[in-house]
Amino acid sequence: MNIPLALLCLAGAAGLDIVSNLLLRRSDGFRYPLWGIAALVLVLGAFGLLGLSLRSLQLSVAYAVWGGLGIVGSTLLSRHIEGLRLNKTGWAGLLLILGSVLALHLGQVNA
Image (cartoon, rainbow, N blue to C red; front, top):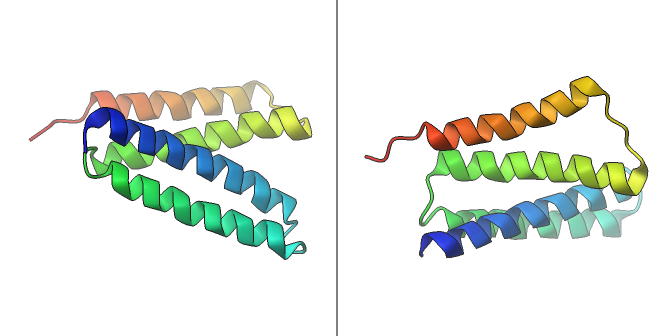
């Protein structure tokens, strides 16, 4: 698998993860099980796409990007959909996540 396709799979995995997080929230602790089951199905799809991306990307970078995009995306969508508010510390945390993923990517050594 070439790098652009691997990155597309990784972006798709992050997107599915974000949507599954929102559906899990909607399930209200599985009080509404269909939302929870839909979230689980999307998580399985996200892991599948993450696995495909690992054919061309290193695990450390792919997993960090997937997790970081999932956290940042879920937070920003929750802000938009549910009105979640972040203070300066919350925004700093999101920037640290993005900076950490970038540092990990830039610090990798290809053997």
